[in-house]
Amino acid sequence: MTQQPGGMGAGAARAAMAGDASAQHGAGLELITEAPERAMVIFAHPDDAEIGAGATVAKWARAGCEITYVQCTTGSSGSNDRSMTTAAIVPIRAAEQKAAADTIGVKSIEVLDHQDGWLDPDRVFLEELVRVIRRHRPDVVFAHDPERYSGFNHRDHRAVGITAKDAIYPYARDHLHFPDQITAEGLETWKVKHLFMWGTDQPDVIVDVTDSLEIKVEALFKHESQIGGLATNTDAATRLRTRAKDAAAGYEFEYAETFRRLTARR
Image (cartoon, rainbow, N blue to C red; front, side, top):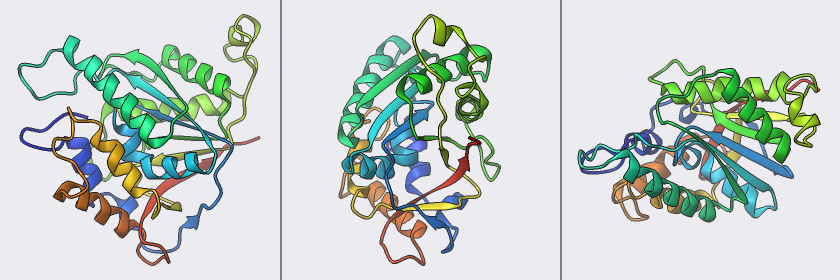
């Protein structure tokens, strides 16, 4: 996500303002009430995880779910400050992401160190995602929806969504894909149960995040280089709450996050 002059970054603005179908569905989605044992969030840039699934993941972490973050790029292009350099912004964003992850309750962060804006859904990236899935063995994976057509979708976001889907099925599951990970690295195949995608045009599941939305707001505030002035009493935070409230319309709870779910073949 890139900082916009004079305020919050573009990604945070999208998160704070109702504008995609996932916040405008009305009632009728399947309510997810149980947290899995382990979950993984695969995301393109620092702050994408909190924007996309921060309240759900915070809720699950507090229910005992072991959360792993997989940050795919360094966020090296994430600044509109003309005096900022790539060398300077990368450690800033790394520290911000660590602080946000700690707020959410994340157990571990894997950083793949790709250059911001240069992600490709290729074999190298696929092998990396298969490796982290086999290493951490999540029941549920969260990622960007690569098939959102109602608005612009960052190229890196599309690459993450496409490659995460492929990594889950069939590559992490089948032993003849990247067999060196098994024979040389001591990993084993793994079957992810569900993929939850945020930023979707067609959500089909919903999570009550009434008790965890403020954790999401607090975590996003840690990304100070991207989200200038986001705090619990600002208009930006109010818009975040409004969007979550819109997502919960028709349900017997105040705030929600919604996702498109794919269930992997066993």
